[in-house]
Image 1 (cartoon, rainbow, N blue to C red):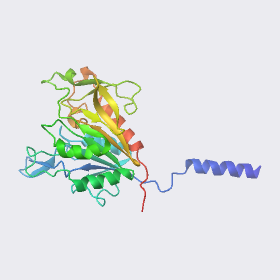
Image 2 (image 1 turned 60 degrees about the vertical axis):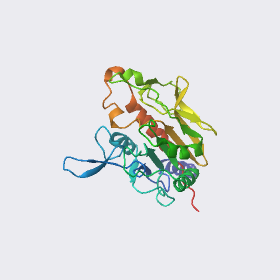
Image 3 (image 1 turned 135 degrees about the vertical axis):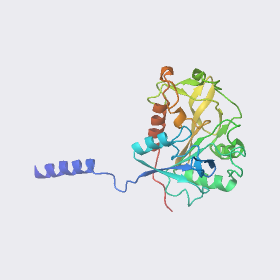
Image 4 (image 1 turned 30 degrees about the horizontal axis):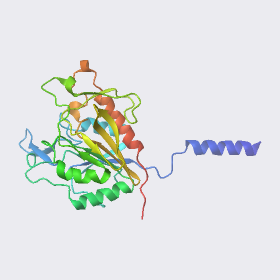
Length: 268
């Protein structure tokens, strides 16, 4: 009887003990290819547009809060991605690479960056690419990276929204979607649709257009959308409630799914 009690106690202890070696999940946002500045009210130049710190409509502060709520740590990468600078990151987000219209001397995605990112993904990294239409994002170099994983951002402008006719940007999501478990209707506008090959798979489509896709590569995975999408302005910050958009739920769905994909990195 004592042996039985000991075994039960041991099994209980194993069940409730945290996994040894568990580490904080690190989400790194690129601020090298997207490197925009503006003058603030004090007259100083400040970084803005799709950053964690930007709390205005142009920032990702709301999405960052969702990651933190789910136990992740946020980082920003202000230098080029290399094997060393990506070390320690579980998720790496590249959004809206700069054009010359946005930055005088934009940093383009070059072959050395592609090599480093590809190796990082192969070893278990989660790469997120959030593009934009070709008038607002530098797609040619971004496509060189994306095509390594069977994804191509098209030079189009899908779901073009005129003024405040928000319903023009509506996309309905089926209840059996593999990523979007709670969001049923979302808003995107002026999207670069996706062309897929080499095993990349569509996650969200609309009128036979691929809007969201994923691709597995080695131990890692890639998530792509042709729009910055869930920044503050369109995480239900500006969207009228009467339209029933659930971009805030979509942000939660994406966040939880991305964090669930994280796998331990292999060490040499």
